[in-house]
Each structure stands twice: as C-alpha cells, then as structure tokens.
Amino acid sequence: MIPAAGDWSGIVKAGQRLRIVDLEGHQAVDFLCYDAADPAERYNAADTMKINGSIFLGPGSKLYSDMGRALFTIVEDSCGRHDTIGGCCSNESNHLRYGATPGPNCRDNFVRALGRHGLGRKDIVANVNFFMHVPVGADGFMNTGLDAGHSKPGDRVELRAERDVLAVLSNCPQINNATNDFNPTPVRVTLFDRD
Ligand SMILES: [Zn+2]
Image (tube, rainbow, N blue to C red):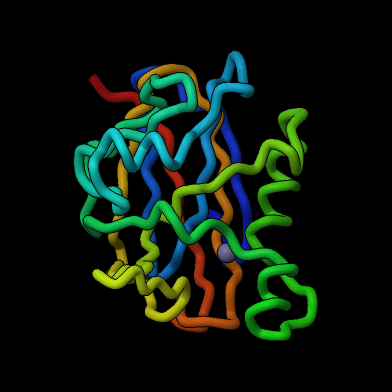
C-alpha cells in the first residue's frame, strides 16, 4: 500500500508482473523504469510514443528504453489511457504555474526513491503518468492538470517486465490542480509471477 503522496521502488524480474491499483480513482501515479543491470539504459518517452504511434498509453503499449528495447508491456488495463507528455510535478513547476510554496511533489519523491538504488536527480527523465489525463487538442492545446484522470475506484494497470527492470513510482501529491481531483489518495502495488 502506497499512501497518498508516497513513493515506491523495486526490481521486477523478467516475466514478473507489476500491478498498480488506483484504489479510490482519479489518482495519478508518476512512473520511471530502468534496466536493472545497467540503469544508464532507461525509459525513453519519445521513442515510446514513436514506436507505439500514440502520445497515450493503453492496453498492449510497450515502454521502450533509449536502447530500443521494451522494458515493460501493459498486459492489462481497466483505465485505458495514460499520459506520456506531462512529466512530473515539482516545487519549481508548482511555483511557476501556481505561485505555490514548497510541499510534497513527485520530483522529490523520485529523488528519494532513486537514492535507494544509487541513482539521483540526474537520472530523472520524462516519465509515464499512469491514470493521468492530459488533454491535447488538434491545435496543440495541452494543459497538464486541467482535468482529473479517467480512472474509477479500483482501476488497475498491469505491466509485464520484458527484462529485469528497476521500477520507481511516485503517488502524485499534487493539490494545486485537478490531476488528483484535489485529493491525493493511496494506491496499491503488487508484484507477482505469472506465465
Ligand atoms: Zn506529481
């Protein structure tokens, strides 16, 4: 159980599955992943969008590394839409966008979680946002945080590791916009074998 605004990290072995459940709905989960043996190889948002042919992730999407290898495949998904372009919240962006004073944020969560694996700020890249909705218009309009996500209570996404992967997530603490419906809530992470 990852409390509201908490973080988690762990190694997911090749073939194992990582399930993330949005227990109460409308909760964004910011997500990074790395090759466990060589974390210099990591999730690459641009290649993931290009190869999947979409800026959104859903059932069957693969999360690709900068070396052209799949790290995870989305094998089950009851929500169906996840963001690749909004990135994570930080004190700095919250100040720029909302004049907010420092508080819990995904960037600090990432730094804390990565620190448990000998990684740090330089290892943060453009991340996946599970259960997050970032509308993008035909004219290029985009507004991270305009709407709460589409997830309902109990929605889940299940990822199969395609190699040994270090997974890092932040249960987004954002309260300055609608991302979490102004109410960050817990999520559940389960690691299990199948196949
Ligand atoms: Zn966040």
